[in-house]
Length: 140
Image (tube, rainbow, N blue to C red; front, side, top):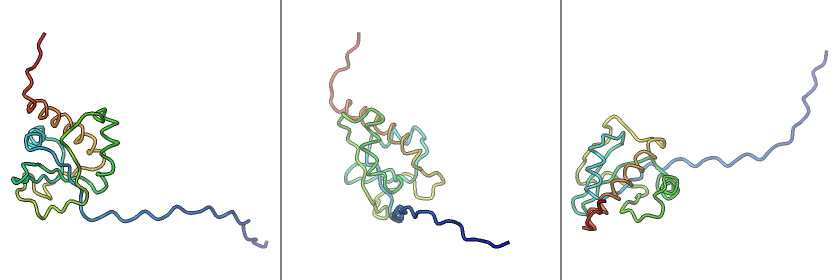
C-alpha cells in the first residue's frame, strides 16, 4: 500500500496577530463624591486611587477600556447624558497621591465587571450632577 499526499487545500489568509496588550491599565475617572459612593457599594473593583489636587477618584480598569466606554454608555442607555466621567488611557498609577484601595487588594475588574462598574459609576455621577445643580426636587 502506498501513501499519497493529501490534496492541497487553498491557503486562507491568516488574521493579523493581535498586538500585545499595553502594560499600563486605564482609569475610570469620576468625581470624589461619586467615587466614595461607589466604594460604599462594595462593587468588585481593582485598585482605586484618589487625587486630592483634582478631587477625583480613579478606578483602575483593564487596558483598552478607554475605547469601550462610549459604546458601553450607549448600550447602558447613558449615552446622551452629560456625565462627569472619563477614562484615562494608559494611566500610570505610580503617581497616585492616595490609594483608597491599593493594587493587589485581591479583586480585579475584568471586562465583564467593567459593565457593572460603568453602570454604577454613571448612576452615581448623574446623582452628583443633580445634587450640584441645587434644583429643588418635584414631588407630586
